[in-house]
Amino acid sequence: MLRKDFLWGGAVAANQCEGAYLEDGKGLSTADCMTAGSRYVAREYTDGVVEGKYYPNHVGIDFYHRYKEDVKLFAEMGFKCFRTSIAWSRIFPNGDDEQPNEKGLQFYDDLFDELLKYGIEPVVTLSHYETPYALVKRYNSWLSRKTVGFFAKFAETCFERYKNKVKYWLTFNEINSLVFDTKMSTGIMTKEEDNKLFVSLQCAHHQFLASALAVKRAHEINPDMKVGMMMLYPIFYGETCRPEDQLETMLTMDNHYYFSDVQVRGAYSEKARRYLANNGIKLETLPEDDMILSEGKVDYIGFSYYNSNVATSSNTDGRQLMGGNMMNSVKNPYLIESDWGWAVDPIGLRLSLNNLYDRYQIPLFIVENGLGQNDTVLPDGTIDDEYRIDYLRKHIEALKDAVEIDGVDLMGYTPWGPIDLISLGTGEMIKRYGFIYVDRDSMGNGTLNRSRKKSFDWYKHVIETNGEEL
Ligand code: BGP
Image (cartoon, rainbow, N blue to C red; front, side, top):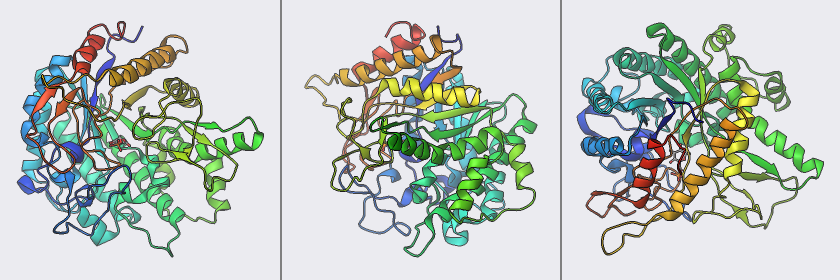
């Protein structure tokens, strides 16, 4: 049985749904500078907002103005929690402002009040792939140690303001994505001549410090607050049982445990130190850093899981690859792929839960999972998304196995995008995850009206029965 207080809900990010990108004093963020793309065309990250280009996040799904209607629908499904993020540039428009923007703070007060009115616990990410754009221009974003201080102030402002409303926090969304996409989480565009590994790991070091300072401060402000780390868990299988493929699998995963080891254990592992030295990376640090990290260990691990990947020691030139959340790998012949090429693998979720729990022994929280697929609205207005139900049912079965058979301590499950929103990877609107359909296409046409899909009632029943009836 899942625990009685299991946190069923859904997860979004401010920049992918709120819109109102310059309203009520909000400053420009890195996410506001991402154009629309598709599965085949990469999103472009522009220097500020360029006229004539389409930026889907500027309107998102207009959650900023419609959140009451949306929260009501979440409540109707029986959500116990709702994960969203705070747009940093709503609170500190330039990131380095002296005073916070009151209207930004008020928006989240109102949103949290609305959730709490229905008994829905907010789960809040402080940084979900958006950095105030001014910090990128003025300080080179997370490469600068100054940004640690700016973030710490932002975090403290949020903890002080929402200490009686928000119990569950996450610091950096998918922090380990820094190893393969520095731009997404920092806004830094590396140049040919840059040492990319140094840039990403120096930014990571600063985010580790910022996260640790936030954890410590949160506990001082309200000891009941729980602050988690958030990682993309990219489980890898070796392509064959050749030892070389297994070694490749281990080395690939080491790149990701590099992050969770620091945030959970409060120190770089010996392996991480060797990795830095072997790659000739000398991080810029201060003597107090070890202490800061050790005092800011997280309370739980939040992670996203969508698909599994395959590691190989063979040459991949000319081979057909499969997609996945933020990365590609060689194909897994045993799995089917979604329309966007991501391998559907519920057992991979059970394995991921086991891997993380065996390694760290602290509570886990699946804060993202789901199937991105376009939906067809039938002539009578209904949407029969049985494929989404099927995906989620199998993943919930897998997480139950991890809890009931393997003994994993799991706090909750918040599938990604309970309401359709802008895709992070492609900027499309038609890559839909929701139980709630939003009438808008990838070019920005549509009424933005909301309607219930078939999965809406299904998920409601899952929550009602605490996952007993799927
Ligand atoms: C994760 C992000 C989310 C998100 C999700 C789905 O990496 O944390 O912000 O959107 O993946 O990815 P996509 O939107 O590309 O389908």
